Every structure is written in structure tokens, then in C-alpha cells.
Amino acid sequence: MSKAVVMVSGGLDSATVLAMARAQGYECYALSFDYGQRHNAELRAAERIARAGGAVERRVVRLDLSAIGGSALTDAAIAVPETPEEGIPVTYVPARNTVFLSVALGWAEVLDARDIFIGVNAVDYSGYPDCRPAFVEAFERLANLATKAGVEGDSFRIQAPLIEMTKAEIIRRGVELGVDYAQTVTCYQADAEGRACGRCDACRLRAQGFAEAGVPDPTRYKVPAE
Image (tube, rainbow, N blue to C red; front, top):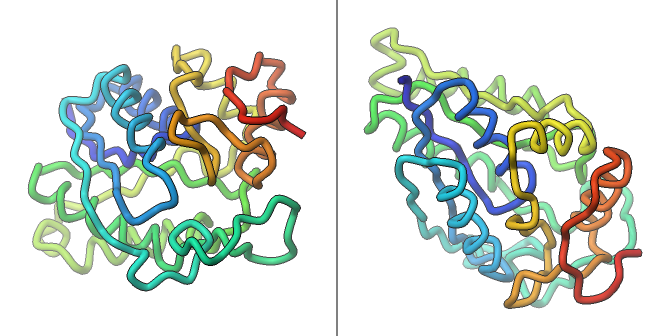
């Protein structure tokens, strides 16, 4: 079996990506980040997902992005918006996926894995610049320029299988693969028990996805979803 590093955040998308990588026959190594985010409910969800999804190993890397702030997800002084915003929202974390993929690349090289899976999506998403196909393609080029393996011709692949899928399509695919979405946490401001706010952008996109997929929404809410 080929090895792959799969970035598992605890959310709906990364749970689906892990299931997809496993279905393709990869031996999966799950990687999560404790980066100074608002809550750690998603990290507990990531542990559940990695275990249920058959990951060979799971590691949590601690990177305190709250030290630089600049995002509602890493700076408690910036409120998480509960109505749609124009442009790139304040929940964008500066350079997050660039940093995360760099760490994943390092671990992949150590493991002698050549595939890195990430659950970015450029259809039903919040408009983050590091979720676009151009970013993924550029990082793959960087990976093969900046590593011993890449220079020696053993190329890395950054796999983003969800990037052109709608949220409903992602959910339907996950259901086909047996993903238990009740175990996932998507909300930007979930409480300690992992219950969602039902109002942030992540909650809206998730609820819309389940509705459009025709799949019962297993999300536990602090208040009814709007």
C-alpha cells in the first residue's frame, strides 16, 4: 500500500477526504494542527475521525498562529461574523494552508510518502485564497523544488479531491463511503461539547449541503440552525 499524509481537521470535508484516500487503497497518516484556534472540539473530532477512518497513525502538531493573530479564528478580540460578508472574511487565517501543507510535506518526506491529501474546496466555501486550484498547483510545484525527494525525481502529489465538488456532492460521497458526519465538528465557534452555533459561515454552508444532498443533518446545535 502507498502511504499518504491526510490532513484531518475534524470537519466534514477532511473526514470525507480521509475516507476517499482509504478507498483508493492508501495507508493513511492523519495530521491535525493545534494552532491556537478558538476551540479544541475540532481536535477531539479529528481524533474520532482518524480512528474511525482507519488511519495508521495520527499526529497533532502545535503551531501557535494566535501569536500573529489577524483572524477571527485565532484572535478572541475579533468576532466571528454571523451574517454573510463581502470579499474574504475575517475568518481567513493568514497563510494557514501554506503552513499546514509545509508541515505535511515534511512528515511525508520522513515517512517516504509521496501523496498529501487536503480537503480544500473552491465551490461551496468562504472565499479563502488558499483553497483555490491555483494555490494547490503552486504548492505542488514548490514541494518538488524544495525537498530532497523532489530534487531526486521522486515527486510529491498534493491531492485535493473535493476542490471542484459542491458541499452536497461531498456529503453524498461521504455517505457512500460510510462517513459518520455526526462525529465531525465544522462550526467556527463550537462550544466545549462540540455543539454548533448554527449562524457562522461554516454552519450555513454545512446545513445547506445536507439540505441539498437530501441527507438528514446530524449536527448538534446550541440553537436551531437559521
